[in-house]
Structure formats: C-alpha cells, structure tokens
Length: 435
Image 1 (cartoon, rainbow, N blue to C red):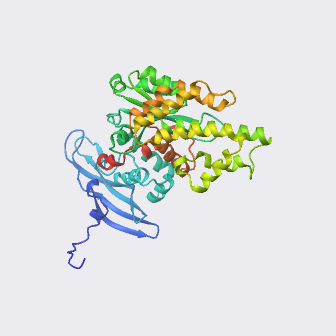
Image 2 (cartoon, one colour):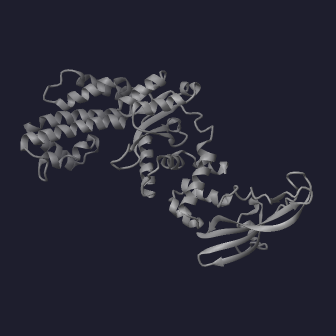
Image 3 (cartoon, one colour):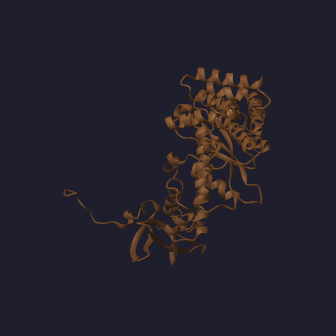
C-alpha cells in the first residue's frame, strides 16, 4: 500500500474494546500471553440507592479472558473504581456489564470468539480453552450458556418449519445405558432450495413414544403447519406421525428403501453361498468376489464389471441371486429415472410383483415384498414430492459423528444435545446478527 495514510496507533480500537466500554492504559507482552491493563470509561459515580454523587473509595482489579490475537491468549486487567455515597454510605463499583456478564471470566468479545470458533470453525472445546487461556470447564460452561441464550432458546427457531425429517442416532458406543437418541431435522430449506437442512432437536431414546411426546409438546398451530415427514422404515416413527400429525404425509426416503433391497440381496447371496459351499464367502468364491459389484447400479458398471456379473449369472445355481439382483436394480432405476412419473410407475410395478406369486425359495424377496406392501403409500409418496428425503438427515448424522470424535466422546447427554444444536442447528447465517 504505497499511498496508504497511517494514523496514530490506537490499542483500544485494535483490541476491539470500544464496544466493551473499556480503554487500554498499558500492555505487557510475554512469550505465551498478552496482558492489557484497562480502565472503565464511564465514571458511574452517582449513588444507585439515593441518587447523590459518591466519592472515590478504592479500586479493584477484574481479570477477563479476551479474544486472542494471533492465537496468543489475551487477558484484560480491568481497573474498576469503587465509590462511596457520602449521604447513605452505600458502596458500589463501576458498571462493567458492557465488558462482561456479572462474575463472568470471559469478556463479551472473548465469549463471541469462542462461540464462533465452536459453531463456524468446528474447533474443539479444548482448543477454544487453550486460545483463551482458561480451563476447559470455564470455556464449556460459558459457551453452552451463551449458545443456549442467543441461539438454542431463540423463540423463532421453530418458525417456518413445513417438512420434518426424523431418524435415530447413536450418541455413544458403550454397553451401559441407552445409546440412541431420536433426531428431528428441518428439511424445509432443502425442499425450497433456500439452504441446507438443520437440526431442530434431539430426544433421548429411540421409540414411538420419544417422537410422539416431542410432537405433542409443540403447539397445535405449529403441528398443523407440518406438511411432510420423511423417515426410515421404523414403524414407530410412522405411528407417531399418524397420531400427532394426521394431515401430514409420511415419506419413506429412497436411501432406506434401496437399502432394504440391498439387504435382501446380501441375505440371498449369503444363503446361496452356504447352500452351495457349506461355509461363508471366502476369497476366490464367485459370489463373495462379486459382493460389491452386485450393489453397483447397472448403469454405472464398467465393462469388466459387466463381464463379472454375466459370468456369475451364467451359472444355473446362482439364479436366485440373479432374481433378487434384478429387483434391486429395478428399485435403483425407479429412483434414478429422469421422469418421476415413470419412476413412480416402476416402483409401483416392483411392489405389485413382490406382493404375490413370488416362489417360496426366494424368502428374501417375499420378506421384502411384505415390507414394501405395508409401507406402499409412504414409498410412492416420495415421487410426488421432490427434494423430500431423509438424505440430509443422514448428512447431519455424519456431522454429529465428527463432533463426537472431535470431543473424544461425551458422557453427559444434555451437553451433547446442546453442542449438537450449535454444530448442526443452522445458526451460521444468524450468528453474527445475534451477537
């Protein structure tokens, strides 16, 4: 910047203390931290009890962790003057509420930096605590309290929800205690093309009651506004939706429908493997070697994979696997069809074909047919409602898995739910507006 005009350095502005009502009076730079001596700008010398003007009595030092600069922890040593009223002898100190909450150990700027680091930059709580030079518990308590105040407890957070997604999530992998929670997702932005899905809430347990109770706690007007609920094949979510949201349409998302077909294919392949060879699949067994190829869509197979499939099904003893594979490929084609009407017709044809006339030997297809026939309306509803699936819910599940790994696991479900809402609650576009 050869033509830039530089002004006299202002450490108060550089450290962003103007909005905190503080002014820098000195600095101390050490290898592992920076300390800024500050004073409160406002005098605040009028008695809060009788209104008379007080006289200076003494000063106290309040220490606050501030946002770091260059990842060097910054501490504010705030000199707070105390006054004494000559009329009523009341003693008070200067108001520092602009700088920090009462009895808080983090300045408001430091708290904002920590919340942005957790929500937007996906930092671990340990990294945030290190940047602020405070203990993990201090950082965790402050971030969760502030996040709940400005984000999680926002009364407008549930407004505008029209499409819900519900799924299960394993929040811990231990033998003791219930490890599953029910996850409720807002899929409205995905359907409308305005943004990504966002986490609305997490409920302890994986059952019809967990989801039903959560819906029952919402007001009637909100429930009447829900148009679609996307879910997996768990019948408990379906029953809860029918009872609490009678006007909403249930949609069984493509991922879980195709997975049912894939599971039927795997079960058939393993059964035929055992019947032919008397053992599980081993290296060199044709069915075992082709297990991944069989799960690939027919339109994505390479020439080499085509040859492997043709060679596999050229053997008469593999005809049951071939029949199951054909149904699985038809299910994939139904969802990939460029014309949704044609895709719906194909899926309806598959369900009808599996409903009757399936040979007794094809036990996997008979089981699949019963499942699809029971949820036929939910399966076909997807084709009438574009951009409505539980795929975004699975994506949020993946982000929560990353959060749990980043924190090296959670033991407290309440803390996990709060951190999950901050991580996947869709607060990024709104965070700086709140703060």
